[in-house]
Image (cartoon, rainbow, N blue to C red; front, side):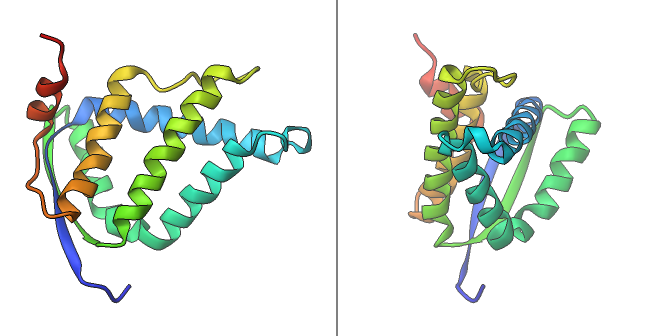
Length: 159
């Protein structure tokens, strides 16, 4: 990667919610790998497309998140409630982040309508976390200031 890097700050990231989201994502990816490998399931392209996107993002940008993934795992193991993270990312990540968000939404629809799936659609608190997490990259790469999780989530709570 030769493009200029930009800082994306995730402030007051809720560690327990991140951990729940990671566990759900891991389950989803494992199940989608099984579905995608089944010749009889080729009519369902959502698992294959999501897996291809995850593979592409990991190959292109995986090194960017390694240190923060380790920090998050450490914070989870220590029982921390929240953590601040800084990612140094190229501007072109913005399009990939938007595509990932769309694919994860599509995967949730697939899970809600799929038959014989063990993995359920993403629970609402984790969907909200995912939207905040991905939106922070998009917003900040567009020049906006970071919005801490507690502020973002409080703005979306019903009055």
